[in-house]
Length: 79
Image 1 (cartoon, rainbow, N blue to C red):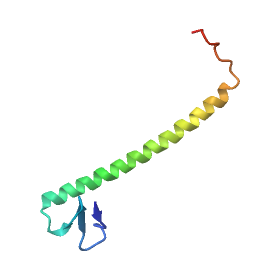
Image 2 (cartoon, helix red, strand yellow):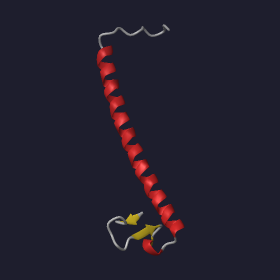
Image 3 (cartoon, rainbow, N blue to C red):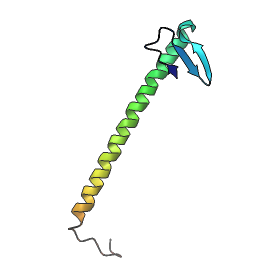
Image 4 (cartoon, helix red, strand yellow):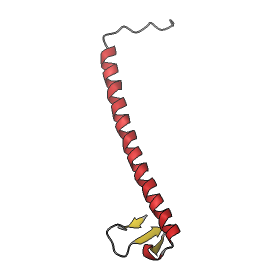
């Protein structure tokens, strides 16, 4: 969304293919940009959390499969 806004003395907002001088935007728009940056960071964090959970679930499924090898399953047709 932005091109190095934090480290650049002349930060540029790139949004929907257009570039804007972030310093000249009204404060209301700067707040919206900051809000979007926070939302983007939260989305990345939660996406990473989902990846960790998926790996953990996969590991538990492998452990369950391994441990069930020594347990006799119920024959088909029985509840």
